[in-house]
Image (cartoon, rainbow, N blue to C red; front, side, top):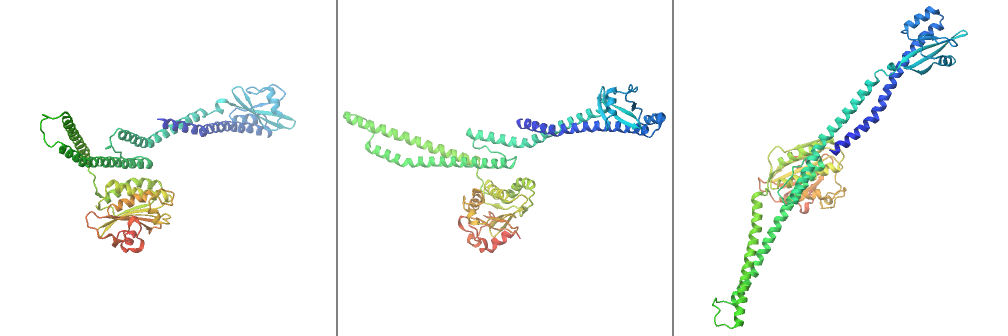
Length: 473
């Protein structure tokens, strides 16, 4: 609502700045047109007087001018039908040019005409209604235009902001839910690119929180299990101190106190063992329930992920006039990577393309499979990457970024036994190839395809990789 008010105020100010001068200019145009008509009428009568047409010629000229002009003779009483007083007539008779004077109900145009030794003054009266003819209509039209502009801008901003506000509200609600302990909540990334990226980041954060909590519970269960060994030793030692369960009869007071103490120790040990068992069962049951409720799918269709993510990136590509092509994503290609992880890796690489190449730079996303491996290739026509090996090191990018984008892609590829390489694309820019294991095949030894540790590029050492970088065949 505040954004709508701000937009309305801004548009109203802009409309006033442009429309008020326009309205004033239109008013002056109407006034000038009325005065031009009056000048034409006085000139017609003045021409007849100067030509010596006599009273009959002047009468004919007045009739031709609509009967509005009146001819005055300075020094005598003003002619009948005129609006100008004697003072105005005398002043106009000595003026070198026609004059325009304000009178009651409008203005008069006084044009002097000298014939021989005599001077006449031709008067044409322009009423105020004629001066402001259609001015009110123009102001109402401009006011309506201003209202349309303000209303249209508010509607447009509201429609544009509705998605952003909805996405932001979803993120806020999800964050509050996570803060209240509901780690199962997720958001559907939508809205502008920044909010969509925030949505994906939130989902990954929630996944990491769930994983961290699960790992912590497993750790608690493991540590609790380790306590069983010393507790068992303590219990055995306590039983060894009092092996028989005889009644306390005919014993000295010291022996009675000793046996009672031993039994209290054994009872405490038993209680502690029960608590440890309860802790182990509780933590592991929570982990089991989590796994049963939300099993982690370590397999996804790479083609489906590419198509889904390109539907997101295509809108931004259209806004930036980027030509793009998707190749090989029409067939099902399963890879042993979680769907969210592969989407995050692809988003990281495509985000670098959009972030570090000029607008209008073309790019291509291609999928191909061969010999037990799947290649996900992202090419662009940008300036390329000068030092691929350094770019693949975590936090070592020299393009002004953190260097973590390619590291996300590298870790996703290495999770399947593959790697990430960077080379020069056929389009002229960078070519980032993620090599993933094919879930429908048994991959051959990675060394045959130039796969190297820590994500280092194989470059020209492997002909198969070079064919992949040129595109699927």
